Image 1: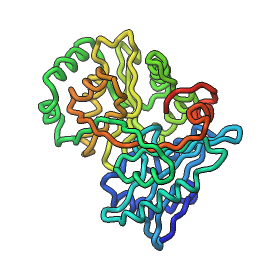
Image 2: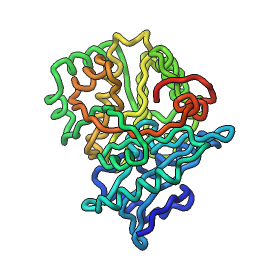
Image 3: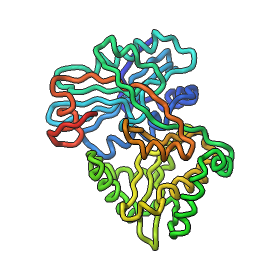
Image 4: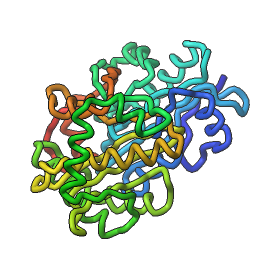
Length: 333
């Protein structure tokens, strides 16, 4: 058994595709289409695959992103706080996974690395604690997709129909869009939304990269909500391996009372169910965000807890945010 760290450009695409096909728990953030986004938006980001390989066959793997600036680095499992942790074929020996994580922990650890963080969506990451990583419980909301939107609506809470009707009555129209102007208007809403909630927005360079991927591939999809031609909300999805992840959603606060997000979700669900996708992830559910949690559960989302494993140097979060955002300010990761 060989344990290797492979740069994105050198990944054996066929072997990795075979692994993904054999791992029912793999998420959109494990896909090669997703992984390309990092190096596309940042010249200071590098993408790797830590893998356990037997001949030409991959038994387990984990995508890893390294952000670097002025000689310091922050290392994350792929997925912007999403679910790009270790994956393995069914029945894979636990020792193989332990050795894979050991390879990650020893390779991505040193005086220049201020933070290493792994999202362990499938429950394989416990051996990281043997290497000094600390576990933190985090949550998302997920749901299986039924065979029809009508079936989903029946399972959802009764208020869903009322909110969707209110949006339609107000004239809110939602459709998938690859229009650059639509996306740019929504990107401004998205950054403003993060700031309004006391969170740091994504780097400005990320949005043009996402727009490019939306035009190039169906893995990235953008839905725009409009009122009289004005973009008043929208959502970016990551779709791969039969799954849908709601990555970024934002609404113009001036139109929040119009149930814009419900209208967006209705159109998304109608489209992805018709396409035959099987699972939907509403995205991270921060502790204490009761309004957000209620919204997800109204549509049928069920809370799923999982673990994040992190190892940090003495400057920890400060250094990591400097690497990712270019600012020496601290916020919890």
